[in-house]
Length: 435
Image (cartoon, rainbow, N blue to C red; front, side, top):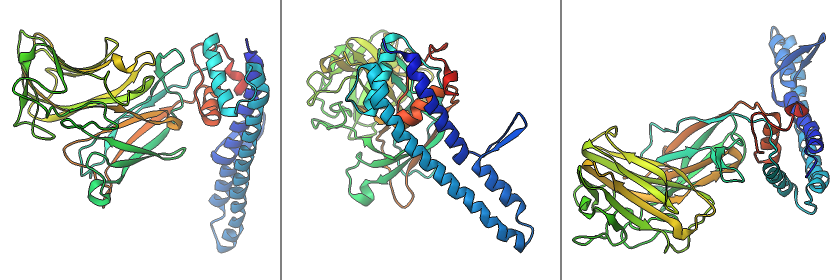
């Protein structure tokens, strides 16, 4: 077993050094200890500017404040040099402890996380949270945006992604159908976090009829292909009388799926992903969603979900708490485990035996979520009846994530290694080594 105490003693001094350089260059702080006062470069600059403003002669002296800006840039340069030394340490000493010589620094860091999980080692956690997604009030379209900060650990247990940090994230349309000749439902957005590079995000298109889509795994999510009794791409698994096609109520195409419950019949309609070509990737996060409309409801529920090797996941439920008389989007993010091969995934629309009412479903979609790993985020955009626009005012969404940065080693791993280490309470690795 690697000597984790020795490894983290070394990583701890790096963590303290990065924190010190960040405090010096990028924070406005003033601390007193044992009769001495530490002031960051920004605090010194602020104090110069606060007093050198009473006369032209004093303001001439304020040019000295620019020296602190230059000093801060120099300190940031030291951080870059320190990062190069950290990479060398990972490739050398840490790689040797892990039996991973010859790997790059990033690969060694991932090996460390894997070894820690296997050996039951952990660091102190950072508590992270995700705020609500807010659509821009001037949005021209009704695209629906969903976000998540859940991830999975080495054992595929869902956990919070501690790579998330305190920051605002903007999601803005940059290319559309009206101005850039993209197909409707293929619009492009840009995800811009405060920290790290921007990431491209595409709207998930809705499928209609016999035409598959490269990104949306569901075939005929608008239920267009239908004869007098059956849907071509959906198989009735029970309660066939519950399902019909409604040619008058729709979001897309010429109609929608209609579920009519009599309070005594359970309905089950399915699409098997076994024949999907190319096969769906497992061990990945997917966006799953649909548009629903409640015409009437007296009892029971309608549910859209995924069967992952026979186990229900990602349930989207329509019941007595769902508003009536309007189209609403239901959606979210679902993890498809590594062991769930393509022939074990089924999309299902069903109603409970006691369902009494009328519900319409349209635009059922399943597509890989877009990852923003350096922000600890997974995102998906679902198409609506109205397409988004990039000009003259871009459609946008805003969200915020937060982290209490309570774990010194975890914050160091996020900022300098680009990953989250296994965490627990209490942790087996002493966090004081990084403070």
